[in-house]
Amino acid sequence: MPIEAFSPAKLRRALVIKLRHHGDVLLASPVISMLKRVAPQCEVDALAYADTAPMLQGHPALAQLHLIDRNWKRQGLGRQVAAEWQLISALRARHYDLVVHLSVHTRGAWLVRLLRPRWSVAPKFRSGFWADSFTHLYPAQSDPLRHTVETNLDSLRALGLEPIAADKRVALVPGANAEARVAQLLAQHGLPAGGFIHVHPASRWAFKCWPAERVAALCDALAAKGWPIVLSSAPEPNEKALIAAVCAARDRNAVAPAPTVDLSGQLSLKELAALTAQAKLFVGVDSAPMHMAAAMGTPVVAIFGPSGDLEWGPWGAGHRVVASNTHPCRPCGMAGCNDSKVSACLTTLPVAQVLAACEELL
Image (cartoon, rainbow, N blue to C red; front, top):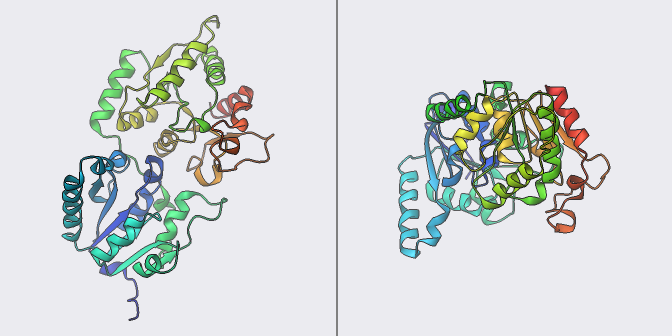
């Protein structure tokens, strides 16, 4: 049976699925924006993991956000089945005309078969069950010279749509409560908006992190120039330990250093977005907070090791990527050298190189 030609005018409801990590979900937000532009009459929903919900909550083009809790599988088979059935029932009640699946997660193929939308699109992954589940396919990420935002938008290009510049903006909304708490914290520490540098050196993956002593030396150099430093991290023990190591390594004998505020483990994701929106500059590694800072319009200095900065660098103009120029093996895409969890391209990256990038943007 021939596939009906795609028509934005016939869309009443669409579902965008992104079952990945925080940064991946945030970089999928332009797909939601573009769908709403080309089909303003359409209600655009999204499906994501519950822990990544803050990346999309408040998106101005989003009608409903459906969530999968990764903890369902730990609550016993009965509760998991009940939760899954409730989700599928809620999705089927929406009667989607279009499903856009932005990963190769097998759940997307099963959902399309259950929801039976008029059109569905996903990355080319494998033949058979996967390919037969969707009406349209687009090339999976295979070009390391293209950014992930562009690859996500390829899903809509496969439908015959072409994005404009406005579609490519990453949308992140902190919300009034987060903005109010951050305003209170900044006032408490005497920090004006635009008057501090936000440093977030941590990641859940240690092989992406710059050594603590080098982060400390950078903070000392920036503080010596009169810039207050605000440190942040997720509440996970390994990330807070990195911040503690940075603080322990700081040069206490620096001449009249500007103050340092340690907010590690104290902020929600929405509050982290509100904080970075008020910073003069963000300095961090390849992580979700780096993407959040870029989305909030804050100039970013992003420190990259084994991961590909052309695919995953800060999206938009006015940012700087700092990476080793003495390791031609990068980006290798490995979890450290030979998967050792230690990346030589980061452990040897000079402080002066990162400081120079900061000074360019300051």
